[in-house]
Length: 263
Length: 259
Image 1 (cartoon, rainbow over the protein chains, first blue to last red):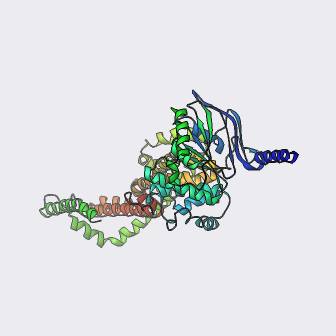
Image 2: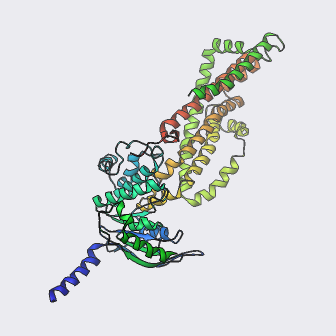
């Protein structure tokens, strides 16, 4: 009994200290005339896939800007790995709906940018980056320019760049939003597959309910602007997941709940 | 490629027709040779006086390139400083725009008074002619760099130097090159006009001397040389553009399909 309590304490301690990668506490943010975020708190644990689901224009991207350190919150804190990161850049990078690859650089040079920024020499950066090209389905396209690749491949290159910047945490802001439905499904499955390989934690923004359930361990559903966390869903559907999950009753049950919450 | 050739046929045929008509008019003796020499006569005088023209061309080219490279060097530095420091931009930008409305050529006599009859006043004219288009277009390119790319760099903790190196300067290159092309087009003309106003050598001087002796064929020969040199200069810059910005010339409808 006593040991059980001790174990419980130990577990909580482990959770707060080691397992939590990102902790967002009571963030509030207004721009002139635009009250974007009222109060958002969330946590991202090690090896977790967490989605932020909400209507368009509800401040999801602002939340990412705050976590990435590009914007300062009016109130509240961002902790990454236990350190306060309000308004500090350079710890996590994000990936957008737009691939934001440099059109003037080859794919290899593009994904090397974060490594060079960290002080690696171009040659060493290229060696390190090239190792990941097969896993990211980019092998053979090192010397291609972004304009020569399809939308899905460009997004994979953007993801590789994000991954090379910070291997443990990735912020993905509607990364597949601009892809057609079929490519999008393919990319979701691919993302799950690669995520299981790379041991990263992912914070994922989407307004697609199915996408959120399919990918995540936990979903934070946000309200309209000014955003608050309406409800948190823990998705206990076992991994590895595949497309058969999309028609399961557990999936539909959660989908129904979120649907009723949003509309 | 085939299509490009087909499209080029039209201007080539038109140009040949103009030359042919010109040759016929001259052969018919409608105008005296010192008014309008025939195209063939112009070519003959070009080749017979080639050594002389070549010597003067080298002088003009020397002035042009010296001025051009100094101007580009200054432009890049000034534009970078203006882009990096807002106060400098606010101060200098209106001045640069207004000064662009001054036809630099009218200043040529002043430069002769101040700097004599040597190469210097011509080089200064070339510098002034090249400086403004390059500075303005490079600056424009720097300031229109994609905000989101800059933010992405910032999120990765990039400093100002890296943002310029990876994003701002590369994205300003197309604009920079169009500035270079404008500058190249006018630079040889600038040097020549500087030589008209006063000098001892150069294509401008050659033209003035030919004019004084009513050797109109030689004046035309000099015009031909200046035109050809300007085109070559422009083409060199276009080649450099293609070499340094291959991504700009990728065919757009071509991309590799998903595996």
